[in-house]
Image (cartoon, rainbow, N blue to C red; front, top):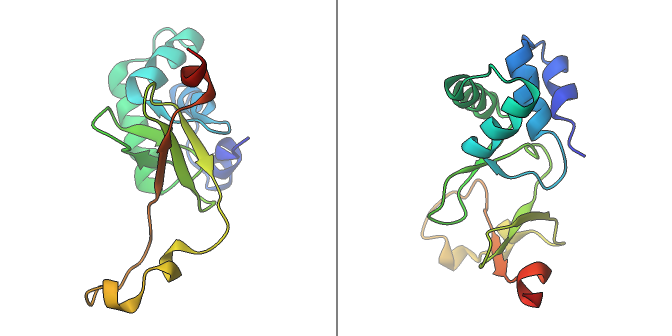
Amino acid sequence: MSDLLERLRGRGWRMTAQRRVVAEVLDGEHVHLTADEVHARAVERLPEISRATVYNTLGELVTLGEVLEVATDRRAKRYDPNAHRPHHHLVCAHCGAIRDVHPSGNPLSDLPDSERFGFTVSHVEVTYRGICPSCASA
């Protein structure tokens, strides 16, 4: 389970009903929802929440560094509350399901100096692709 709500409270983020609902929808492990999915789930909890409020709140959370914006393919961006523990993503090539993975090793150090072309590398994004068990059994 992510600690998004605790982190936001600790930062003194103004927790309106709308913001709280968006944070609650995002809180959890392996959560990678699109903005439309966040809105649909938020409406179930708070019917009057607008799409604009959801988009604005997601933008604030990304700007704060409390939620990551993830683009694993040409589909809509997804929002990941696991912003403070380094991880990579495992993506199903059929249904688009995403899981956080924490492989051992340091991919930053795996890139030899000869392949850095003078870049100062600050971070690495690795996406593993495959077929999830549900799609494999279908």
